[in-house]
Image (cartoon, helix red, strand yellow):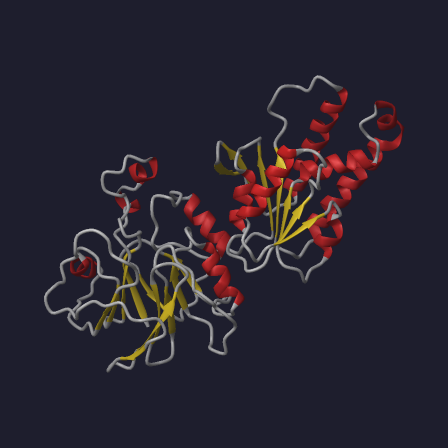
Length: 400
């Protein structure tokens, strides 16, 4: 089965016409994309878009053999002209199955937003799944059907759709996952490829022909990722994005609760609200046993600064006399123990930490102590990490 991506952008294309945003300004040349449309084996067209016949010709294909034109989402705006000789485009009711004279089988799938997904099976049994923009499958459960060979979906806008498919066994390590419906909310390259790689997905240019069943290696999801950043830099949100396509994640909150602190309670509530429903929150600073458990789902540790605060509290290390009478040794031993566990872990793990070494020198000895010890901890954890990011003004800068 061959799938030619005649367009890989959202319904408005990229750049969006008359949009002055920075993302659209950068989407020129090879970065420009046409509205999403896919030609499957020359017989099924998924989504009819302006200039589709020309796009097919540029990719070296003809639409003369089309048997079926399917629409996946509501098409707002002016009607798209249907090239002469094409079948009338239609939206298929959810659950309906069609069998073409070519032997291809098509099944319409219900979505959790306005739209219809399509599963296409070739005569030789290869399976493709195409999801509309902004949609994820509705009510996906475990199935006896084999996993898809190729999945095309809105990975940037709806990474949870990929998580649902993985949870149901519909996407496995051999499934080629390709992002489509890319709009101006998607980061430009090379950040786009880095983000998709964390999902186990990739992006390709318009006109690319994908062969279902051909294994295409994508970069492995990093085992250990450290996300650094200052206050309100976006580090927590970026760490969450790195695991957004996993069906299950343990969110390790090291901050605990603070009785009577309304601002802290509001921060915790906002963090919880944006986490996917399938994630489990664990409030603890006992990180070593979690990292040692090789069978558990991915960990998101937020954050190491609060973990260090708990260690300093536990060891009484804020006091100068205690610090010089053994507390310093105990704090650093705890940090070394955590670093060893981080190095040895077999779980996928993302840790968040504060970058505190670039600001004003703290006025107190205790403040300087925290800054110095967190700087040492960050450097140690960074040296044992596969991937290190620094968030500056919401932008992720790869350090490793």
